[in-house]
Amino acid sequence: MSLKKFAKMFSVEPGTKLDLSKNDLRDTSYFESRDEAERSLREDAEAIDELQDRLFAEGKQSLLLVLQATDAAGKDGTIRKVFGPVDPLGLRAHSFKKPTPEELSHDFLWRVHKKVPAKGEIAIFNRSHYEDVLVVRVHGLVDDDVIEARYDQINSFEQLLSSNDTRIIKVFLQVSKEEQRERLQERVDIPAKRWKFNQGDLEERKLWDQYMQAFEIALERCSTAWAPWYVIPADRNWYRNAVVARLVRLTLEDMDPKYPEPDFDPKGIKVK
Ligand code: AMP
Ligand code: MG
Picture 1 (cartoon, helix red, strand yellow):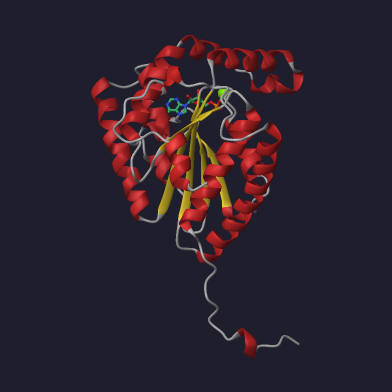
Picture 2 (cartoon, rainbow, N blue to C red):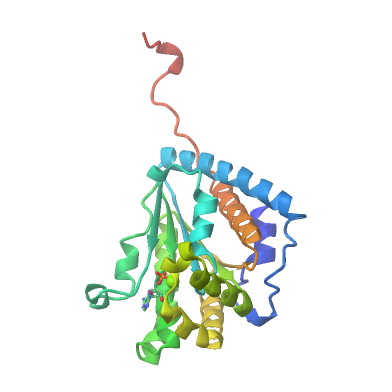
């Protein structure tokens, strides 16, 4: 399937009105079966590794993958599964936490701009500058007019990156409220998962509808030709992983990185 066809199925068409509550989050229709999705994930992850090698060797363009979701939607797991085989030297993942006092004393994009990928690199944002129009909006952490201005500021920022040969893809992993309930409960019940449990997540869960509304606004206003948003049904991990891997692979293939031509004649050199 081409990136165009994939985008038709999963991307937010710029200028459209979103209703996230309509999405079927258990949908698995992109793949015929779980077996096929798991095979596809393995193949795509290998292909991503090879494409990343070419991207690094070429050194002319970069890829930025932004991951946003509610708690327990599986951002960490997605990164592990999709990028598992990729050479860590060409990959950078960064998690954006609650801003530090120093970060708060700058504009909201300051800490983000420092983490964008250099030419030849793939960068993954586990949360991102979108927190500044999501959690910040839901909790009213800054004035309304400041938030209002941020959507255009984000679009301009992403356009700047794009014109500097950074390809941007943004993924909203959408889980249902019921699925989140089960996953948070697992974090309480399963000892190896307890470190992930955060009492604060229960407070955020109470604000579910406000978060969905904030996501709708952000995705509507910031899905652009140069940095599209994709909405991936994420109630089933195997499906979520395979679809994200396909998106990353199709995007890298579309970027078509090429090994540089050697600046010597390989036929004329014999290593002794
Ligand atoms: P986690 O990713 O689970 O480690 O949690 C990180 C927390 O930091 C989440 O609750 C985010 O909403 C929060 N966070 C990230 N960026 C911001 C921001 N710009 N302003 C306020 N909170 C943020
Ligand atoms: Mg958390």
